[in-house]
Amino acid sequence: SREELVPLLAEVFRSHGYEGASLSLLGAATGLGKGSLYHFFPGGKEEMAQAVLEAIDRWFRREVFQSLREAPEPRAGIRDMLAATSRYFHSGRRVCLVGAFALGEARALYPRQVEGYFAEWVQVLASALRRAGHAPVQARALSEDAVAQIQGALVLARAADEAAMFGRILRRLEQRLLAEP
Image (cartoon, rainbow, N blue to C red):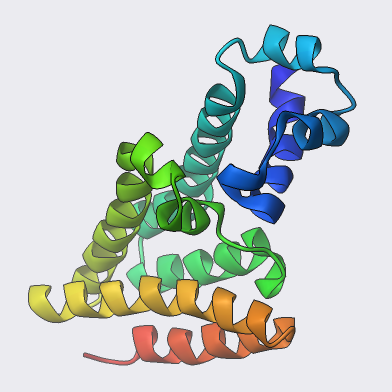
């Protein structure tokens, strides 16, 4: 089904970027020929990438943003966010596809999705930090720093080929976010 293809497509985009994700690579990953890919995704590579971004959006809304919004105790929501983030990025072994799209030509194709992903993450984390007692300006700054630190930790851990680094950085980030205001 189309839904079963999306994770396979995502890994091609994650490994090769939008620009490098050729139809032959996408076909090889899914086991489908060009015609079958177009059957599921008539809009071609752009529609495939759109489906991947929509799946990422749904996952983050359900696994990360919902906890930040709904946890009765905001610090528990922040802990849940960090745990889900670690799981999603396979403890630093997986790049952020939305972040990768932000850096290439895909940024112009999917500006709403790229901007929305990061803006929503910053907003819901800042809201949780406000509920935890931080002043609005401080909560926003901490939230922006946290999302930037997560993204930077992914890059640094991959560059150093040391996935454990991502976990260490997340643990320090957790201490910082959970500290009393």
